[in-house]
Length: 264
Image 1 (cartoon, one colour):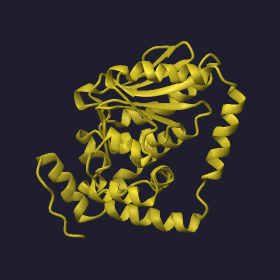
Image 2 (cartoon, one colour):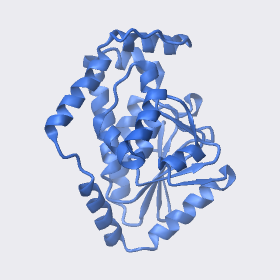
Image 3 (tube, one colour):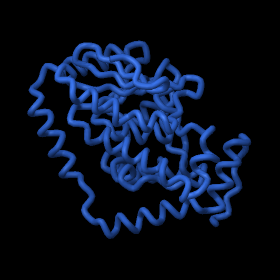
C-alpha cells in the first residue's frame, strides 16, 4: 500500500500503518480531499491484520497539520449553510480517528494548529518534538468549534487549560503542552521518529484484544452524558459561523491583518 491520494499518503511498514498529511507547500493544511481520505485510509489499515498501530504525521518536518486550508475558506466556509457539508466531513474523519479499533499515535513535528490539534486530540497518544508548537485559533477567526472535540480536549487538559487555549488563541510550546496534558511525551526533534517507532514496537508486542478492550472501555467511560445540553452547545457554535465577526475573521486572515470584532 502506498499513495491513497496525492495529499494523503498511506504506507505500511511492518506493524505500523503511516497516515501522512501531504500538503507541505501549505504546511500540511487540511483540505476537503484530505478529510475525505481519512476514513478510507483507516478502513484499509484496520482490515490489515499485520498492522497493530496507526501513526498520523505530517509530510516533512515543518508541520503536523497547520489548520484548515484557507484557500477553501470562501468556497467552503462562507456561512453555516455552506460549511455544513465540510463540517460533516471533518466530524466524520475525527470520529473515525477516535473510534479506530487499533491504537493511534499523533507524531507532532512543527506546527500543530487548529484542525491539527483536533486531529491529534482524537488520537490515543500524542508524541511531540521539542520544537513543536500547538494552538487553537478559533477565536481569532470568529469560528465555532465542534462540541465533541471540545469535550475531548477538556477530558485531556481540564476546563481551565481548555479555556486558556481557546480564549488566548496563542501558540504553546511542546513543553507547555506536555505540562497541560495536551501531549503525552516530548522528545528532541532529531529523535522523534525513532521514539515513535519504539513506542509502536512496544504496543505491537502486546495483546491486541486487551488493547482493544481498554480503548473501547475508556471511550465509553468518557462519553457525553446529555444530548439536550449537547444540542444547545451545537447551536451556539453554529451561530458563530453566521456572524459578522466570522466574515471579518476570514477577511482579516486572508489580508494578513488583525481582525476587528464587534460581537455580532
